Length: 445
Image (cartoon, rainbow, N blue to C red; front, side):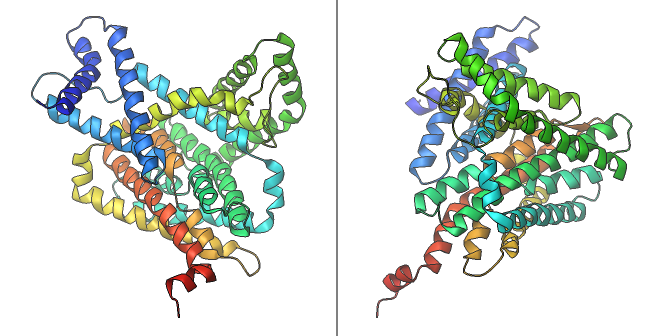
């Protein structure tokens, strides 16, 4: 047996231990779960680094290694009597912490003043960038999945409305276009997309919860009630940040303890995540609001004792927990579902709807002299945001079944992968296409 095969066998065996212990009726040891956790995180980080060296976002590598491990384990353990656990409860909690940390960090980087400065173009691009893919995804799902409930169709459309501001920002930085008009519009619109997308997610997940408990589901009153709660929650928490951010930072400084600001930040993140759940919203909305509340202008809050900002203090935690979330999302994907004809058709349709929906967004650009194609391509990547939406959907239950079935989840992952791969290539091509010097170099006289 080769070294690689031996290592893979040991890895998959370690990951299957919790399930084996559960099946034999014994109390599962915590050690194997810890060992599995360490292996998954290391595998995710190596895959992420390899993806970055290939010029792609790390989230792609983390997702793909999860798909590889999950399906290789299933193939290896078939007929062995050992069940492979794709989402052990202990690991699930840690993965959920990862997504909360990610959204908290996104909130810390949001600059509300910059959103005002980018003007009406970013607002209109953001609005169209949410509405168009939402409508297209909803219609496509209703056509291809007529047997599924309407809430499934809406949730699929909501997943298509997401935009990964992190991936777009990184590509724009690599191209030196962050300060260009197109870059400013895209970044402003992507942040608006995040906020609107979270509100849409709150509405849809709240409607699913209401329907599951015998409520009105997608009635106008239910939707308006959830929308009002989401807007009020974000508005109140972000508004309170103006008055509470300073005292909270001074409290952390008063202790004289290095790193205490991190404790305060995480406590606020998890508390607001819980508060969001209490009023029927997704916990990630609370985590995002906590970040904006502490640092509404993205200036990088810190205490006098700290050389690092709160976002920088969060970095080691993010390096550990966030890749775990994405590799766990990959573990959920069954290649057998992707090979299914219906899933392939749905996945292809979602890719087309995702691309067309975001490429319609530049219709909101006000005035001329703007590379509209670059703006549209900058809105295309779903990346981690699309995966978060899909993950939330797979955890919501209606009539005893997940609102997002394993097959639909696999199709959504295909959409996320394709749009995330296409966006960097499309952005580079769009800027080169509009650059006269680049065209001259390609076509010398």
